[in-house]
Figure 1: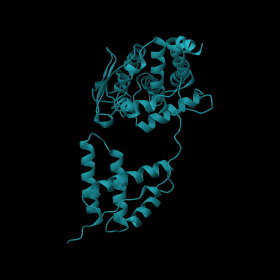
Figure 2: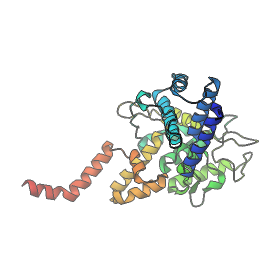
Figure 3: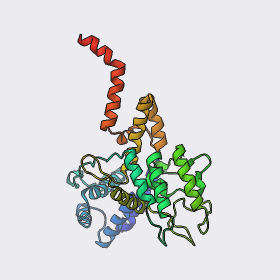
Figure 4: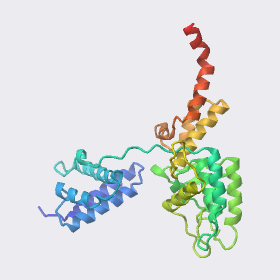
Length: 326
């Protein structure tokens, strides 16, 4: 039997595994990047194939990373190996018992409307720069859309001018997570903010071509879109400027805005007397989730929500409980 080099052998299985996962609707861009790192490392050792020694050496190459990052990379390789094992039963599969232990889950900071008002004021006070003349307007619109529409950061930075309808306030989210596309209608207030921003964005010297980014950060020439990381860092700085903290003194991160959107939706439904349970599938669809199981990750029983739910329960069943206790 002819020996196959490690890079060639892994490359074939990597391509097959990624094709399998993407046929199921998964993007797996990060997973591909991780496996390419592994493949390059194995080729440099050199080694005939992935085994326990090679895997341990590879894990040691990113020992300085956070535990959650290390564990994600290790689990990705394990999933890949399990797929390969279906055809090659004797191939190496790493034991998760020795993987990095995950860090405790960080409870998100739920941001209330009064705090967001301070963040918007901080965004409006930003000074334009030569490389980002639309900085104040872009940051203000970004905060408004993230907080009122619950978009993911990546979905927001990928929006083009062709994806927005200023008259109706409709956003087209194209092929996002799990390759799902959806239409997201904005609230009247957010629609007004979009129109205000577009009056600046569509003016000279900015490129107003339909496929140019909605949020652009330079003038003249090709309009560059924000990266998810860059946008997140800018919004995190606004939280610092606006002194947004929770009752425990914790400052939110940009990903907490999506959690806050979901919680605020529940609060509005309770206050308006809506049927919260029947509205949950609508919330899942709006947020781009496959089911309400994914949406439940964003629903947190904060004190204000707890009080509203308790009051509704008392109105519905308080009399019955008093009769039973009499």
